[in-house]
Length: 390
Image 1 (spheres, rainbow, N blue to C red):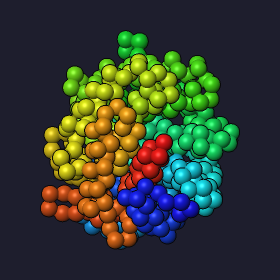
Image 2 (cartoon, rainbow, N blue to C red):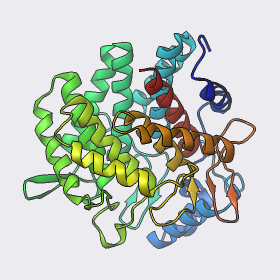
Image 3 (tube, rainbow, N blue to C red):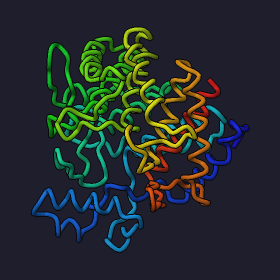
Image 4 (cartoon, rainbow, N blue to C red):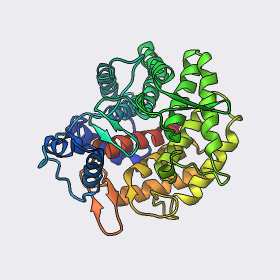
């Protein structure tokens, strides 16, 4: 690295980068079961079989994907997180290596946007069956498109090159034109994908956050009213103690760590880019709930608010991202981020520099999933570096 980075992070970032680049940014995913030709054939008649196969493979403590014919692949959301990470590393170190990596990943994302929609959009590199819907490979989602759109805005903000803003504007067009909307009392909720009408708060918030940030950065003020209508919808779903249920269906009432973090990050973008006061109370209540209920005193990131296990690398990564960004709201945010960082480096990191998937009460799943673990942790560590320096 061209200059010294924040010391506790310098070696973990370097080790993780070596692992990621040795793998060529390709890897397995917790939800890629339907990439197995055998599993696809066996489960084809039934959505319940597809869901059971996906959940069973995700829960196995050992990785049997090579036996099942599942190949490592490029995950668009993971590539978006890598884009954001490389851009921040370039600005922190001035190393042209990172600038080159950022340009390569950005070009890959442009070339692998899902065709047939109003703008740039991205899905997953596997078929996905949930209780709510079945998504064929490549079906664009609000979550993926929002995170990747934010990565292109990061690239525009830090590099100043207009082609990156144009991609983010294209992602905003997809959200405005292709997602379904549910309206209630003057507020709207965007669907998860163009194929469903589910009401999931992190997806709605993230879609709104990309619209809000793009409206300000790109000068598209007409987007802002729609974004704020979506914010209002999910703000109303926040409980008095600051929690958000995952979604509105009866089976979506749980509260978990990384989706709570997504919600906080989405409201943060409005707070930072649009109006620091309008949703400040929502943000403060949510952050207080997050800090009080989703971490143990030693920094262990809990998956659910009411129990500890499983301990998931995704919860750790999102905690580092959102608490770094919200460190100005309360000193407890940065203090907790440092404890989570220490705990994660001590308990979720392999000698290779990669990060484990999960720790259960009795077993550890050490599979180094590329999107779920490595991309998120590189994004988290580089965000922490960036926020510590800025």
